[in-house]
Length: 403
Ligand code: CTP
Image (cartoon, rainbow, N blue to C red; front, side, top):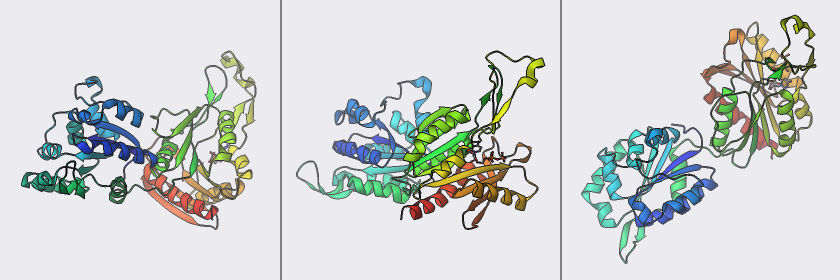
């Protein structure tokens, strides 16, 4: 399973090693994760709610009966594809293996269809007790990933297997067991999405049918892979992506103004927005009457991409998009190639939008064209999958550009 977004839910049960999860939370944040902490109420005896709220920078809820109107166990289970319970006590392990759900955390675990990790930490006698051994076996069979405890000194003088593992071991297990990649860590990526709207009068505008789904999918995928993402969104009604800086714009000029500032600080630009080709020269403050519609005068918008490409440094990569209504594959490829060359791009994704296909859809098909005539045929796939293919291509170009 490929987790979407770099979001993680950290469940904390009532073990003395709960304080070590403060460090785990910090290191996960260093890795770019947004972490929601759900402590059991008993665990608050070890680390208080205020500490979790201060460290995570997010509201912490422990009780099932708080904010019931938002059905938090279901929404939190859906929002987080990764759940890590650290420390996981013998008690919570037993409850989960029995399918019990008597507090917020156990309810979330039961409702979650994501990847679930357990980090057991307890005294060696409790860890080797047949009840715990059996419960762990049951949970492993159900797909839980158990990060085995370390051997060492316990809270008291005793020694054995049951210590909370090193935080670095937990983090490397999370990476090893998921397809989460960090290949874009350290890169700043600028992504545009949606379609610009050019006002004619207070009522009308020139616009297009771009939904922004592709650009949002790219932004989310790039953030999942560790990039610092700035999304410039034009007229979309898609939910915000946590962890992604988003600037909302309306017109091509507004989009250009943001990109002109941000491009210089970015390693790559992925221009998936559909920019309106024309704007109105004589915007009217009052609604233009039907009889006066022929007074509307158009002028061409600046070609944002072409202008930015001219300012591109050697260590930057630019990816363009092209929406065409073509007469067949070779026509489509030729149109993409022409825009790749004309706009000095490193890569372009060209797709056929005849009869409104692709706009607003969750899937796409087309061709990725790169410099040196490289061509990748993209069969009909989800916009999320295309995002990862494009990012794979962009990443190898970025690595070359930074050599
Ligand atoms: N683009 C841009 N500024 C414009 C027009 C387009 O930056 N004024 C960008 C788009 O975001 C896209 C690429 O250029 O990444 C190609 O856009 P497209 O609309 O397919 O091409 P146009 O250059 O507008 O050419 P035409 O409409 O004639 O096909």
